[in-house]
Amino acid sequence: MSWSNPQFLVETDWLAAHLDDPALRVLECTTILHPLAEGGYRAEFGRATWAAGHIPRSGFADLTDDLSDRASRLRFMMPPVEQMAAAMARLGVGDGSRVVLYDRAVNMWAARVWWMLRAVGFEPAAVLNGGWRKWTHEGRPTSIEPCSYPPARFVARPRPDLFAGKGAVLAGLGERATCVLNALGEEQHRGTGGVTYGRPGRIAGSANVPARSLVDPTTHAYLAPNVLRERFAAAGALAAGQVITYCGGGIAASSDAFVLTLLGHERVAVYDASLSEWATDPTLPMETG
Image (cartoon, rainbow, N blue to C red; front, side):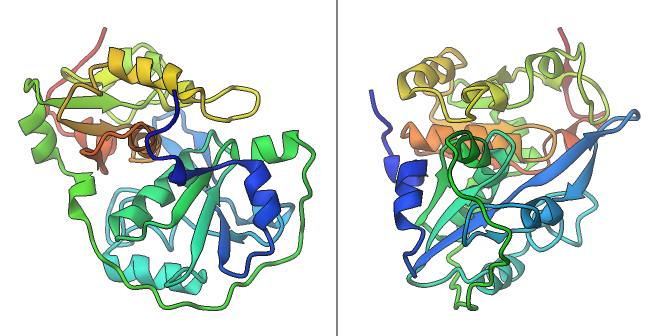
């Protein structure tokens, strides 16, 4: 069984053969998260890691500032369309570009930027299967040379349906047509361990497919399509007319959403604020166990 939308995933062999393509824009999207004792994470800007060694010709996409809503009290929220378009233009992404995204953390940061690009109507983007882990595991070349793609003209064509707010999540709970899907780990889903974002546990009635369970632990490459199809089917996602994914702050949720799109699901949205909003509001239903 193969992917329904294979154009959104590229292999390391393909990227190695196309690195000299003048239309190609390779962007590293890594952010480093450090768990905090009081809950949540401290986010570390990943540019220094990129500067110490990266895929040749790759630039760096900053999810801690350029690609986050600076007016929001929550981290990593989708920025206004104008901010997103300007940031992408500075990175050299625009008409005629093809973008390949990668990271150093099970593809979820790359999937997040891919989802954001799709939400502003940019389709010729793909995630590098396995990212930095697979690239270096295969002994492929790396570089410390800075990269600066020439600025581009980025025309946004917003797709607001790709993100959901708490109202849409509330409306979907208990409806057979909607699957609310948690991308955090199993312990966090049960409320028995891991980082919390306020109240422990999950959105009441939600299912669980952890983003980290989607990849091979050694190479970070996605598991076979038939394996992932079975996992999402078991959670009720493939039979649902609408899927809303969530996590702590919209990052792991983007990885679940990305794989569902690879598998051909046509109505997937990311609850951007996720538990960073939901778990701190006592009026919103949560459960453990």
